[in-house]
Every structure is written in C-alpha cells, then in structure tokens.
Image 1 (cartoon, helix red, strand yellow):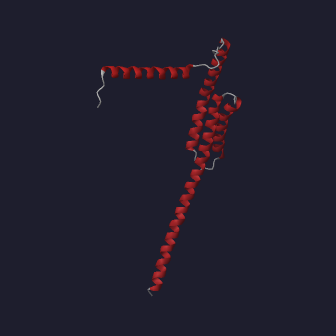
Image 2 (tube, rainbow, N blue to C red):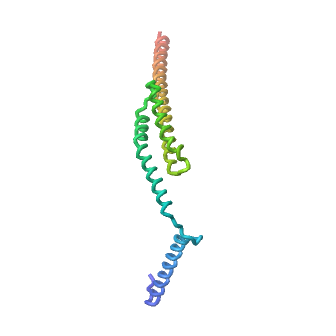
Image 3 (spheres, helix red, strand yellow):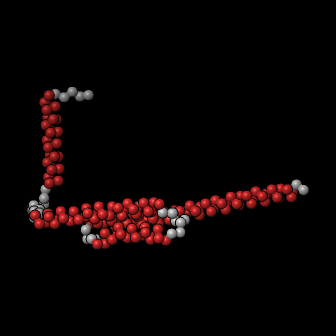
Length: 165
C-alpha cells in the first residue's frame, strides 16, 4: 500500500468532493429542469373537477368491489361437471357488469382496470372449465389404460395356459 502525503490526500479529497458536487448538480439539473420554461398552473376549478372525478372513481370501485369478489368466488367454486346453465350465465353476467364500468368511461385510463379484471376473470373462467374437462378426460384415459392392462394380462394368461396343454 502506497502511503500518501498530507498534501496528496488533501488533493484527492478535494478532487472527490468536486466530482461529487458535479454529479449532484448534473442529476439535479436533469431531474428538475423544465425545458419549456413554463410552470404548470392549475386553476381551482380544474382541481375541483379532478378531485370530483377521483371521488367518483373511488365510489365506483367501492360499489364494484362486491361484484368483483362475488365473481371470483363464483369462478373458483364453478364445477363444469354440474350441468347448470344459470351458474355459467351468472358468471358471464358478473364479468359483463365489471366490463361495463370500463365501457361507460373508456376515455379515462383509470377505468381500464375494470377491463383488465374482466379479461382476467373471463380467462380464469374458461381455463377452469377446460382444466376440469381435461382432468375428466385424463381420468377416462387412465380407466381405459387400466382396462387395457387387465385385458392384456388376461390374454397372456389364456395364451400361457393354452401353450402349457
């Protein structure tokens, strides 16, 4: 390790301090510089309108929370083996009710969350139906495989008993 003199250590310290200050100044300039030179001024009426829109959105979210929770519970409890068309219609109606919130105010990007929830639940619903169908098909194929194995075993035994005679 090289020992530095007091003068060299002071010069290194001043160099690092200058480098730190330059970096802070550049980052501050990059973060806070407004190239247009204009400050954005918000009028009281605009602010009041924005706050009322936020409150309306929060009210819609609060009202729809029950529908969203109910739809999820219906989807998670759905059993395609039960042939009840009204259950599927209830789920589809709930998904449609969630999506209708987006359709009413599609211009507001906050309402896109309702569209995303409806698409997610729709995918979840159809995947759940398909999964149950695939599990049923797998069970049927396993049963067929067991029947084939049993038949093969019986054929081998009958062929073996014929050859021993």
